[in-house]
Structures are given as structure tokens and as C-alpha cells.
Image (cartoon, rainbow, N blue to C red):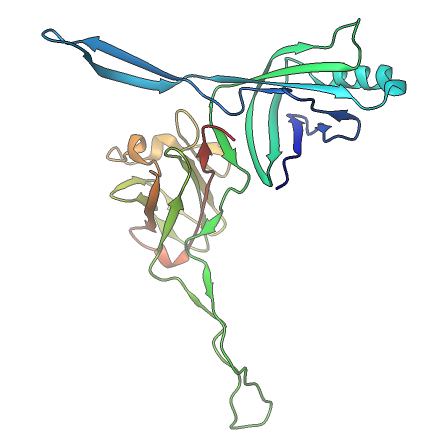
Length: 288
């Protein structure tokens, strides 16, 4: 079993900092907050009798700390300057952790940073994540309107007149729906990217029994992105805010993907056959 730990920080300007045992390594007990989370539970005592009732519970923002030591004492000054230059409280960061062959990630801001002058070979970074959950490395992109791949045996193809010219290699998903599996720890949300190949009137995204409908006449090459992962959710057409064009019956608050299987589909008043709809989502985990 591979128990090697690798940490990769990606800054919002695309610069990276790697802790993989080459220049920096993670010592024993060098990770804190990666295998635990706290559930804030609010209770009210029963008016009569023992105990009480739970009125709310929530997972608060989470901070996680990585401690690393340099592998080469002769490069301590260089590595120290590199770490100080990279970790800056004014940037946003994504932190990818690979452990036991699994990679997950979180994003946030630098909450604490320490590299003592008297111990220049050691650095400590604490990342505070507003969303406390680890995200799956794969965003499981799925084009609902895609061509479904097929295969057949034997493959027949000939240039001779009157003989077979080949077999079906795929078919269009005219059902306009897919089942998405969420085997993460909690419910998650997705981002839907709708592109038009022609005139599409009032496109709609449906998750289980709830929907969001955009009142618009889309033309060829128009793109509408509905991002339920944002808080609050966003709707943009060709990069411009478009949330004011949504049907008032749209159920933004109910568009989550619960643990288990969910049916996602799309439709439009006219032109649904001219839509491409891709769904992106990350599974969420409390610990790694």
C-alpha cells in the first residue's frame, strides 16, 4: 500500500509549490486537520423531561496545516526564500493532496504561515477553506446530449458495391437525460454549460424533480453557464451576468445532487435538439 504523501499548492496566478520529498518532505505528524472535521450542532432542551432536540447542524470553515522540512541543508537559504515568496496572504490557493493513491483538493486563503529564522529548514502553512470539504480530483464532466459510443464484432467494411459498408459506431442520446452517481460523503452541486447549435428558446436544466429555466432566445454559438457551486448560484450568457432572465419558478435552492443517483435532463420550448449540455461536478469528502 502506497502511504506516500504529496502536497501541491497552486496559487491563483498559476504558480506552484510542491512538497513531494524532493526539496521538501513531510515529517511524521506533519499534517493536521486532514483526517477529521467538526460538526457544529445546536440543541434546545426539552420543556419536559430529559434531553433535547437538534435544531441545526453545520460544518464550519476548516483550516488544515502542512509542516514540511527541507531535504538539503545546503539549499536552506534558497528554499526558504522560495517559500516566503510563494505563500502570500493576498492570493487564493488550491491545495492538492495525494495519499494512498487518492488525490483530493481544497481551496482557500493562507491563514497562518511560519518559517522561523532560527530553524530555516522547516515551514508551516495553514490553509483556511470556506468550503470545508475535500473535492474529488475528477470533475466528472458529462455531455448529456453526447454521442453514445458503441462497438460491434466483426467489423465489416468494403469498397465493393453491394457489400456491407460498416456498422454503427455510436448513437445520439435523444433521451436528453443521464443518471449521475454521487458516492461522496455529502450532497454536492454541479455546473451546467449549455451551448446552442442553432435557435434555442427558453432552455431548461432539470435535476430530479426541480428545474432552472432561462428565458432567452439562444442563437448559434451562444453559451449559457449555470453554476450551482457558487453561493449564491450564478447564470451567465457569453460571460455576462444573466440571472435576471431566469423563470421565477426556478428552484435554485433545490438543485443539489444528493448522495446516491440523480437524474439530470434538459429541455427547451423549441430547439432542444440543437442544445449541447455538459454537466460538471465534484464529489465532496469530509476527510482523506
